[in-house]
Image 1 (cartoon, rainbow, N blue to C red):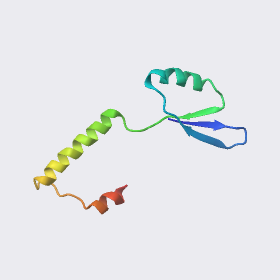
Image 2 (cartoon, helix red, strand yellow; image 1 turned 45 degrees about the vertical axis):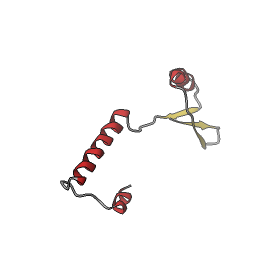
Image 3 (cartoon, rainbow, N blue to C red; image 1 turned 90 degrees about the horizontal axis):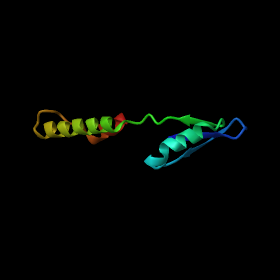
Image 4 (cartoon, rainbow, N blue to C red; image 1 turned 180 degrees about the horizontal axis):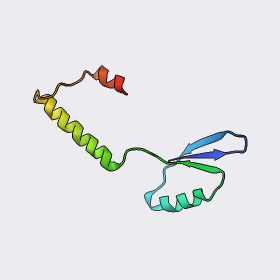
Length: 81
């Protein structure tokens, strides 16, 4: 989660915070009450999406090792990023 702070100069400062899960809901209620803070929600992958992606990658590695799927050179993978 990123928070943007407007200091009345039409510029914004950005900070990143790590909040304990147990305190997160309280913190979000508190910070949303401040009119000078703009919150950008984290649109990162969910735990389920990450696990599904890892599972797919493991299956692909198995198929490559068995010769049933052609792998890509490492440089090509880096170019996709």
